[in-house]
Amino acid sequence: MKSNFLLQSLKDNGHTLTRPRRAICDLLLECGGHLSADQLVEKLQIEYPEIGRMTVYRTLDLLSSLGVLRAVYQGGGAAHYILLEGGHHHHLVCAICHRVIEIDQCLLQDATEQISRQYRFQILGHLLEILGVCEQCQAKTPLN
Amino acid sequence: MKSNFLLQSLKDNGHTLTRPRRAICDLLLECGGHLSADQLVEKLQIEYPEIGRMTVYRTLDLLSSLGVLRAVYQGGGAAHYILLEGGHHHHLVCAICHRVIEIDQCLLQDATEQISRQYRFQILGHLLEILGVCEQCQAKTPLN
DNA sequence: TCTTTTATTATTACCGGGTATCATTTTTAG
DNA sequence: CTAAAAATGATACCCGGTAATAATAAAAGA
Figure 1 (tube, rainbow over the protein chains, first blue to last red):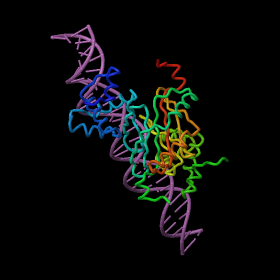
Figure 2: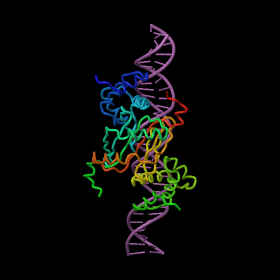
Figure 3: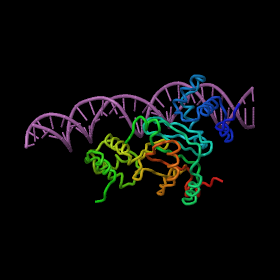
Figure 4: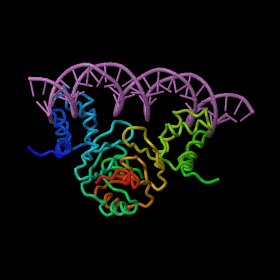
């Protein structure tokens, strides 16, 4: 049984580890994030048909407020949620196919410290989103 | 009469500079961005009561597709739009009062070039959003 | 200029993601 | 075991954004 930092965070902050919350946190971790609320609901229905929409939304909000999850709103559709184990997240978004490519390394250690001092801003986390064209789409639709 | 790079972009791409579009682009530049579509509509109503919601949404979409504007979706409410004269944008978001503090300098010149090579990703722009607590809110609610 | 074609706009109705409400159930504390 | 508190689920609702369409304005051609 692997540990789940989402559940751990709930526990550490005095929240109950209920069946729905366990299911949601496990699924989130299993899928590595990048799911929308409705996608979560749909997947949960298979094994836990009793879990309702509201609980999913509420749990996602709760996790977000604890700083271990983050809602990302790309234009148009539903928000998707990314795991924030290290307090930060970087990813590339393809403007054509909307593929999301995650970047593990953090490019901003120094930069954020500088910002923090300069603006007297207490940093909780950051999100870097790079918009562009992925390799596959460059091949399909050469822009030049 | 100062130049408006939003209007210029429309012109350069063969779009008509109509009265509504002029009004929208002027207002966007005047306010320095960070307005929602409905805020724009409301402000426009004062001087141009004939301009409808749809036109505003369409114009914002058009400008976004040209890469000179970008919709930013913070959780909850409506998207707001930021000017992208240089193709990128950085800002700080206060987790408590939701104030938005813009950062002028770009911290990512080197980092994005590295990403581009490493992932063979053709970068169009980037958005860095730093979440934290601003100076005023730190004073009001000391976290420790 | 007048006509034809194309682009843009305004109105309306609609859709879907997310929220508010509240009664019910589950969990915790005593 | 009982009472209080927390969490859940069903329903209805709200609001930001979209789709569709008819009318208008602008551009192009004769």
